[in-house]
Amino acid sequence: MTTSPIPERPADPPHRRGRPPEPICASAGLAHRTWLEPVRSRFTASGLTLDDLVGRSGFSKTRLSELMRGKGLYPTWEITYSVVRALDLPVGPLRRLWKVAAIEADKKPSWIDDRLQAVPPADTDERPLAHVALYQAMVVPYNAYAQAFLQSLPRARHAVGEVFDLLWLTWDDATSSPDTPRHAWQLLRATVLSRAAQRPAGHYDLRAAAFSTAHQAQAPHLIERLARIDVLARFFDAIAQLPDDQMDVTVLRYLCGIDPDAIPAVVGLPPALVHTLDHHARWALKQLFPDTEPQE
Image 1 (cartoon, rainbow, N blue to C red):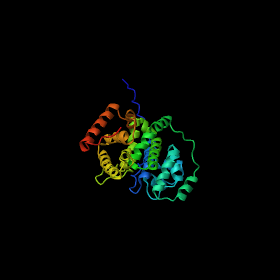
Image 2: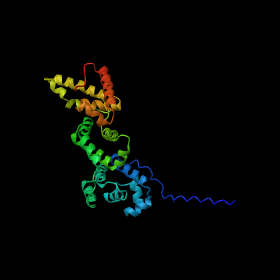
Image 3: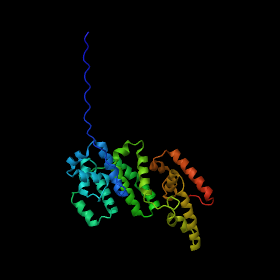
Image 4: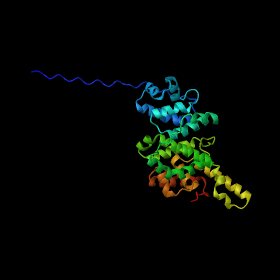
Protein backbone atom coordinates (compact mmCIF):
# COMPACT_ATOMS: atom_id res chain seq x y z
CA MET A 1 0.00 0.00 0.00
CA THR A 2 1.33 3.38 -0.91
CA THR A 3 0.89 6.34 1.29
CA SER A 4 0.52 9.90 0.22
CA PRO A 5 3.54 12.00 1.04
CA ILE A 6 3.05 14.27 4.01
CA PRO A 7 3.01 17.80 2.71
CA GLU A 8 5.86 19.87 3.95
CA ARG A 9 5.01 22.54 6.48
CA PRO A 10 5.34 25.96 4.93
CA ALA A 11 8.38 27.75 6.13
CA ASP A 12 7.73 30.44 8.70
CA PRO A 13 8.02 33.93 7.28
CA PRO A 14 11.35 35.52 8.03
CA HIS A 15 11.41 37.30 11.35
CA ARG A 16 12.08 40.88 10.42
CA ARG A 17 12.18 42.36 13.88
CA GLY A 18 15.50 43.75 14.93
CA ARG A 19 16.55 44.27 18.51
CA PRO A 20 14.03 46.26 20.56
CA PRO A 21 15.13 49.79 21.48
CA GLU A 22 17.38 50.05 24.49
CA PRO A 23 15.85 51.66 27.61
CA ILE A 24 15.24 55.40 27.68
CA CYS A 25 18.26 57.26 29.03
CA ALA A 26 18.02 58.43 32.62
CA SER A 27 18.81 61.98 31.47
CA ALA A 28 15.50 62.28 29.57
CA GLY A 29 13.12 64.58 31.43
CA LEU A 30 9.57 63.80 32.53
CA ALA A 31 7.91 65.73 29.69
CA HIS A 32 10.30 64.14 27.17
CA ARG A 33 9.34 60.67 28.39
CA THR A 34 5.66 61.58 28.18
CA TRP A 35 5.72 61.59 24.38
CA LEU A 36 8.67 59.25 23.83
CA GLU A 37 7.14 56.27 25.64
CA PRO A 38 4.03 56.05 23.42
CA VAL A 39 6.18 56.55 20.32
CA ARG A 40 8.38 53.65 21.38
CA SER A 41 5.32 51.52 22.12
CA ARG A 42 3.88 52.27 18.69
CA PHE A 43 7.21 51.41 17.06
CA THR A 44 7.40 48.08 18.89
CA ALA A 45 3.80 47.21 17.98
CA SER A 46 4.33 48.17 14.33
CA GLY A 47 6.72 45.31 13.63
CA LEU A 48 9.09 47.69 11.87
CA THR A 49 12.84 47.56 12.28
CA LEU A 50 15.06 50.56 12.75
CA ASP A 51 16.22 50.05 9.17
CA ASP A 52 12.58 50.28 8.05
CA LEU A 53 12.25 53.53 9.96
CA VAL A 54 15.38 54.85 8.26
CA GLY A 55 13.79 54.23 4.87
CA ARG A 56 10.51 55.85 5.85
CA SER A 57 11.90 58.87 7.68
CA GLY A 58 15.02 59.74 5.68
CA PHE A 59 17.18 60.14 8.81
CA SER A 60 20.21 58.06 9.73
CA LYS A 61 20.03 54.99 11.92
CA THR A 62 22.27 56.62 14.51
CA ARG A 63 20.04 59.66 14.88
CA LEU A 64 16.88 57.56 15.03
CA SER A 65 18.43 55.28 17.64
CA GLU A 66 19.32 58.32 19.75
CA LEU A 67 15.81 59.70 19.38
CA MET A 68 14.25 56.42 20.50
CA ARG A 69 16.45 56.37 23.60
CA GLY A 70 16.12 60.04 24.48
CA LYS A 71 19.90 60.19 24.23
CA GLY A 72 22.00 63.27 23.68
CA LEU A 73 20.55 66.63 22.70
CA TYR A 74 16.80 67.10 22.65
CA PRO A 75 15.61 66.06 19.15
CA THR A 76 14.47 68.64 16.65
CA TRP A 77 10.86 68.67 15.54
CA GLU A 78 11.92 67.75 11.99
CA ILE A 79 13.23 64.30 12.96
CA THR A 80 10.46 63.77 15.53
CA TYR A 81 7.84 64.64 12.92
CA SER A 82 9.38 62.20 10.43
CA VAL A 83 9.03 59.37 12.96
CA VAL A 84 5.50 60.42 13.90
CA ARG A 85 4.43 60.29 10.26
CA ALA A 86 6.25 56.99 9.64
CA LEU A 87 4.37 55.41 12.56
CA ASP A 88 1.04 57.01 11.56
CA LEU A 89 0.58 58.82 14.87
CA PRO A 90 -1.57 61.96 15.20
CA VAL A 91 0.69 64.96 14.68
CA GLY A 92 -1.23 67.66 16.57
CA PRO A 93 -1.01 66.26 20.11
CA LEU A 94 2.56 65.10 19.68
CA ARG A 95 3.59 68.50 18.37
CA ARG A 96 2.26 70.12 21.57
CA LEU A 97 3.87 67.50 23.81
CA TRP A 98 7.18 67.93 21.96
CA LYS A 99 7.04 71.68 22.62
CA VAL A 100 6.39 71.20 26.34
CA ALA A 101 9.37 68.86 26.57
CA ALA A 102 11.55 71.31 24.62
CA ILE A 103 10.79 73.96 27.23
CA GLU A 104 11.64 71.43 29.95
CA ALA A 105 14.96 70.83 28.14
CA ASP A 106 15.74 74.57 28.44
CA LYS A 107 15.48 75.23 24.72
CA LYS A 108 15.12 78.90 23.87
CA PRO A 109 11.77 80.09 22.49
CA SER A 110 13.51 81.13 19.25
CA TRP A 111 14.94 77.63 18.81
CA ILE A 112 11.54 76.04 19.42
CA ASP A 113 9.78 78.40 17.01
CA ASP A 114 12.39 77.87 14.30
CA ARG A 115 12.16 74.09 14.60
CA LEU A 116 8.36 74.11 14.48
CA GLN A 117 8.25 76.49 11.53
CA ALA A 118 10.59 74.21 9.59
CA VAL A 119 7.69 71.74 9.32
CA PRO A 120 4.29 73.02 8.14
CA PRO A 121 1.64 72.46 10.86
CA ALA A 122 -0.64 69.51 10.25
CA ASP A 123 -4.28 70.52 10.54
CA THR A 124 -5.70 67.30 9.12
CA ASP A 125 -5.80 65.33 12.37
CA GLU A 126 -9.32 64.70 13.57
CA ARG A 127 -9.90 63.75 17.16
CA PRO A 128 -12.00 60.61 17.65
CA LEU A 129 -15.57 61.61 18.52
CA ALA A 130 -15.41 59.59 21.73
CA HIS A 131 -12.31 61.56 22.73
CA VAL A 132 -14.18 64.82 22.12
CA ALA A 133 -17.09 63.56 24.24
CA LEU A 134 -14.75 62.54 27.06
CA TYR A 135 -13.09 65.96 27.01
CA GLN A 136 -16.43 67.78 27.16
CA ALA A 137 -17.63 65.63 30.05
CA MET A 138 -14.44 65.67 32.13
CA VAL A 139 -12.59 68.93 31.53
CA VAL A 140 -14.35 70.78 34.38
CA PRO A 141 -13.83 68.18 37.14
CA TYR A 142 -10.32 67.41 35.86
CA ASN A 143 -9.37 71.10 36.03
CA ALA A 144 -10.87 71.40 39.52
CA TYR A 145 -8.95 68.37 40.80
CA ALA A 146 -5.72 69.60 39.23
CA GLN A 147 -6.13 73.07 40.72
CA ALA A 148 -6.64 71.62 44.22
CA PHE A 149 -3.10 70.20 44.06
CA LEU A 150 -1.35 72.68 41.79
CA GLN A 151 -3.05 75.84 43.18
CA SER A 152 -2.68 77.77 39.93
CA LEU A 153 -5.50 77.50 37.38
CA PRO A 154 -3.09 77.98 34.42
CA ARG A 155 -0.92 75.13 35.75
CA ALA A 156 -4.02 72.99 36.21
CA ARG A 157 -5.26 73.67 32.67
CA HIS A 158 -1.81 72.94 31.26
CA ALA A 159 -1.68 69.55 33.02
CA VAL A 160 -5.19 68.64 31.90
CA GLY A 161 -4.42 69.66 28.32
CA GLU A 162 -1.37 67.42 28.39
CA VAL A 163 -3.50 64.51 29.63
CA PHE A 164 -5.98 64.86 26.78
CA ASP A 165 -3.17 65.12 24.23
CA LEU A 166 -1.62 61.96 25.62
CA LEU A 167 -5.02 60.22 25.59
CA TRP A 168 -5.45 61.15 21.94
CA LEU A 169 -1.96 59.92 21.14
CA THR A 170 -2.69 56.57 22.82
CA TRP A 171 -6.42 56.39 22.08
CA ASP A 172 -6.26 52.76 20.94
CA ASP A 173 -4.85 51.78 24.33
CA ALA A 174 -7.44 53.88 26.15
CA THR A 175 -10.38 52.32 24.32
CA SER A 176 -9.03 48.78 24.60
CA SER A 177 -8.76 49.06 28.39
CA PRO A 178 -11.58 47.49 30.45
CA ASP A 179 -12.86 50.93 31.46
CA THR A 180 -11.87 53.99 29.42
CA PRO A 181 -13.02 56.59 32.02
CA ARG A 182 -11.00 54.79 34.69
CA HIS A 183 -7.98 54.65 32.39
CA ALA A 184 -8.32 58.38 31.70
CA TRP A 185 -8.73 59.22 35.39
CA GLN A 186 -5.62 57.29 36.38
CA LEU A 187 -3.64 59.11 33.70
CA LEU A 188 -4.99 62.46 34.93
CA ARG A 189 -4.21 61.59 38.52
CA ALA A 190 -0.65 60.47 37.74
CA THR A 191 0.02 63.58 35.66
CA VAL A 192 -1.28 65.99 38.30
CA LEU A 193 0.38 64.33 41.27
CA SER A 194 3.73 64.14 39.46
CA ARG A 195 3.67 67.95 39.56
CA ALA A 196 2.20 68.40 43.04
CA ALA A 197 4.25 69.53 46.03
CA GLN A 198 4.92 66.89 48.65
CA ARG A 199 5.31 67.06 52.41
CA PRO A 200 8.48 65.66 54.04
CA ALA A 201 6.48 62.58 55.09
CA GLY A 202 5.80 61.83 51.42
CA HIS A 203 2.12 62.71 51.06
CA TYR A 204 0.83 65.51 48.83
CA ASP A 205 0.52 69.05 50.14
CA LEU A 206 -3.07 70.28 50.15
CA ARG A 207 -2.59 72.91 52.86
CA ALA A 208 -2.73 75.82 50.42
CA ALA A 209 -6.39 75.00 49.82
CA ALA A 210 -7.09 76.39 53.29
CA PHE A 211 -6.41 79.91 52.01
CA SER A 212 -8.93 79.69 49.18
CA THR A 213 -11.74 77.87 50.93
CA ALA A 214 -14.88 79.84 51.65
CA HIS A 215 -14.87 78.85 55.32
CA GLN A 216 -12.29 81.46 56.32
CA ALA A 217 -14.58 84.28 55.16
CA GLN A 218 -17.06 83.37 57.90
CA ALA A 219 -14.79 84.67 60.64
CA PRO A 220 -14.98 88.48 60.92
CA HIS A 221 -11.73 89.02 62.87
CA LEU A 222 -8.20 88.40 61.67
CA ILE A 223 -7.18 86.25 64.64
CA GLU A 224 -10.24 84.05 64.15
CA ARG A 225 -9.55 83.74 60.42
CA LEU A 226 -5.92 82.75 61.07
CA ALA A 227 -7.01 80.17 63.62
CA ARG A 228 -9.55 78.81 61.16
CA ILE A 229 -6.93 78.62 58.41
CA ASP A 230 -4.63 76.70 60.76
CA VAL A 231 -7.34 74.13 61.51
CA LEU A 232 -8.28 73.78 57.85
CA ALA A 233 -4.65 73.43 56.80
CA ARG A 234 -4.22 70.53 59.21
CA PHE A 235 -7.55 69.07 58.08
CA PHE A 236 -6.62 69.22 54.40
CA ASP A 237 -3.23 67.75 55.25
CA ALA A 238 -5.08 64.80 56.77
CA ILE A 239 -7.15 64.42 53.58
CA ALA A 240 -3.92 64.05 51.61
CA GLN A 241 -2.96 61.10 53.82
CA LEU A 242 -6.09 59.08 53.04
CA PRO A 243 -5.81 56.02 50.75
CA ASP A 244 -5.70 57.03 47.08
CA ASP A 245 -9.33 56.47 46.08
CA GLN A 246 -10.66 57.90 49.34
CA MET A 247 -8.53 61.00 48.86
CA ASP A 248 -9.71 61.45 45.27
CA VAL A 249 -13.40 61.18 46.17
CA THR A 250 -12.97 63.54 49.14
CA VAL A 251 -11.06 66.14 47.12
CA LEU A 252 -13.58 66.07 44.26
CA ARG A 253 -16.63 66.28 46.51
CA TYR A 254 -15.57 68.61 49.30
CA LEU A 255 -12.70 70.69 47.93
CA CYS A 256 -13.82 70.89 44.30
CA GLY A 257 -17.58 70.93 44.87
CA ILE A 258 -18.31 68.23 42.26
CA ASP A 259 -21.86 66.84 42.43
CA PRO A 260 -21.69 63.52 44.33
CA ASP A 261 -23.78 61.83 41.63
CA ALA A 262 -21.20 62.83 39.00
CA ILE A 263 -18.13 61.55 40.85
CA PRO A 264 -18.44 57.84 39.88
CA ALA A 265 -18.30 58.76 36.19
CA VAL A 266 -15.32 61.07 36.80
CA VAL A 267 -13.17 58.49 38.62
CA GLY A 268 -14.50 55.52 36.65
CA LEU A 269 -15.77 53.55 39.67
CA PRO A 270 -19.20 52.09 40.50
CA PRO A 271 -21.52 54.40 42.50
CA ALA A 272 -21.77 51.94 45.39
CA LEU A 273 -18.00 51.81 45.73
CA VAL A 274 -17.71 55.60 45.59
CA HIS A 275 -20.34 55.87 48.34
CA THR A 276 -18.34 53.42 50.47
CA LEU A 277 -15.10 55.32 49.86
CA ASP A 278 -16.77 58.57 50.90
CA HIS A 279 -18.19 56.94 54.05
CA HIS A 280 -14.81 55.52 55.11
CA ALA A 281 -13.03 58.80 54.40
CA ARG A 282 -15.50 60.80 56.46
CA TRP A 283 -15.18 58.32 59.34
CA ALA A 284 -11.37 58.47 59.26
CA LEU A 285 -11.35 62.28 59.24
CA LYS A 286 -13.92 62.41 62.04
CA GLN A 287 -11.57 60.46 64.29
CA LEU A 288 -8.81 63.02 63.74
CA PHE A 289 -10.99 66.15 63.73
CA PRO A 290 -14.17 65.52 65.73
CA ASP A 291 -15.31 69.14 65.38
CA THR A 292 -14.52 69.51 61.68
CA GLU A 293 -16.75 67.95 59.04
CA PRO A 294 -16.37 68.20 55.27
CA GLN A 295 -18.94 70.71 54.08
CA GLU A 296 -21.25 69.98 51.15
